Length: 114
Image 1: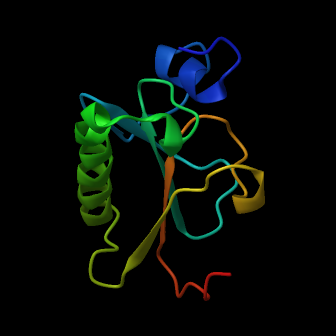
Image 2: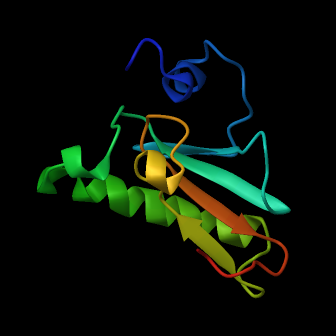
């Protein structure tokens, strides 16, 4: 856990947040500034800043994040209409919180990326 990380503080309960799902390796919350009707954050429990810092032994963690995304797409009823999964890395990509996380966006027609 990183002491100054908002996601680590949410996971530890120091900052209250409704966890929509809690799996062994990750948890899911709603984004506080949603960019779509469904905008969820899938966050590893272990603190990582960037994918580049992960070694092959962490592949199950990434798999767990995608499992959580699949489960949440079903519970948020966006499986049929479609959804987008995004992992921003570093400033140029728009990563605002320095803790690896995946965005799930859906619930309306999304514009093109870029």
